[in-house]
Length: 341
Image (cartoon, rainbow, N blue to C red; front, top):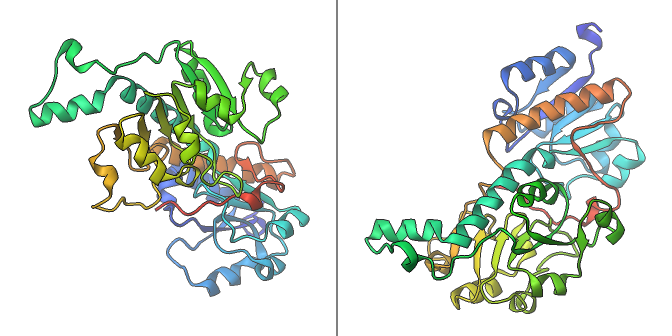
């Protein structure tokens, strides 16, 4: 393949920077295999539109409505590197044209799973709470600081959602011999049973769990999936770990439960980010705060670039993508994701 007949790839990955997701060797591989039109610092729609008719792939998540896709006659792949499928793409047209719509969600799964486990251990044992007490001179020693401590080992654990995050978290939890149940309405009970999991209706999972991990994406069906009634069903002392999408939970209802001291929580995602300075969540002792940090670590970002290059190579060779998440035509229109700041 000569330089002139390499497939053209538009690189417009905002909010990512190319150097964040492509290590030098991986970027060199991308440039060797493809003619890269790098629009990272050029947000002029006219520049994008000039390159689009010849584009084999788009790396990024720019607006691709029907009119733009009509001009993209050579387009074979859209590689979303932000982490969410947005409503700014005419997905039915892309699917009808055989354009691969791919997401980078799997790149974050291991990092999020490990962070979720860390939050669970923290709220189980009061680690960051007692650290704060030490810094204010009010620390407690030995049993005095353990009145509400619990073990994760052998605990009744519920996973809400069993996608990328659930599959990454499960092996970490196996080391603790937990009694695990899963609620995921997008998966048949028998599909979960085939991998040794117990499926449970949401009310049952909430009533019995000592730890609940919220791992579900936000869709038209799951907005405020955990409202006041569902949170009230949690047993006293439940540890709630929220690392997927803020809109899955009613934060006013969650605040009430935490303020009453009835449950504890580790929370990584927020309805408004940054969290306002006067937000009442800031004064809660039963909360471990995390500022949307679970997935965005350097190793995860670099994996995105590797996944993009591998799958574009696959598609250019007439093979299916194997590393990125393939958008499901039945689901992509139901997502209610918003950009991560």
